[in-house]
Image (cartoon, rainbow, N blue to C red; front, top):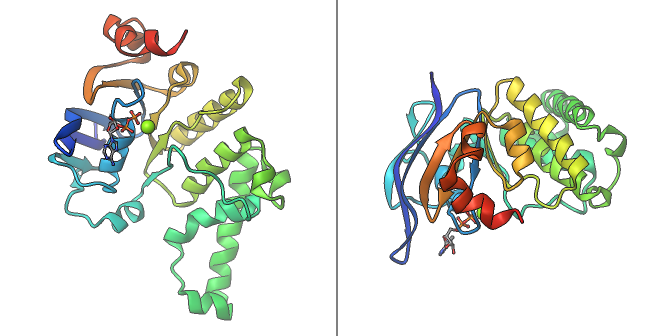
Length: 255
Ligand SMILES: Nc1ncnc2c1ncn2[C@@H]1O[C@H](COP(=O)(O)OP(=O)(O)O)[C@@H](O)[C@H]1O
Ligand SMILES: [Mg+2]
């Protein structure tokens, strides 16, 4: 099976302290992988390494068979490797629709000048993007709010909006950093359904998440990180009953 992502012997050291130590795992194309582990385990650092926001100290990363370390960081998103940030929020001064459209800037080919002049090609492109953004808002049940300020949405809506914005960049591999953080149960269930829909259209997912209900619902595979090392990997059912995982993670988090 083709791997969307192959992480091999990855290491990241900050001032001599390893945040990531010899991490290897594979994300098969078209699947959803959950990356779980306690705070400080190195999950966000791993995302930063995969998206080349940070250079790795050692190891290799392949994206659909292509070595990533030779790519300039600004090319990564254009290759379809798109992420959301753990602390990212919506652009509060923009409407819901504008927030979704903001995710498309990577793929707008027309120059800024031609957009300003409203040339026919730029106009077609803009309309195409708008139609896609509206279709995504429909999918997420946010179409009614499209003209409202994004900051008026409840937290659940804002988190969905971040995912929609990422989808506008046409990801092949989508990395989500704690997308359910701060969501209530019904918002989490909505997000789960949305992630399953995204996976069903062929987008590979790698999701950092503490919410075990979401993980069990969405993931085909779970990778458990603790203190910068992979301590377990397997199906959600295997992981849930793995004593090492309960020791490293579940017991410490879920009271
Ligand atoms: N830029 C940085 N400089 C120094 N240490 C960092 C940096 N980023 C992360 N760390 C350290 O790396 C470890 C892993 O952090 P992080 O990847 O944020 O964990 P997680 O996302 O799993 O909670 C922590 O000990 C953190 O303090
Ligand atoms: Mg983190």
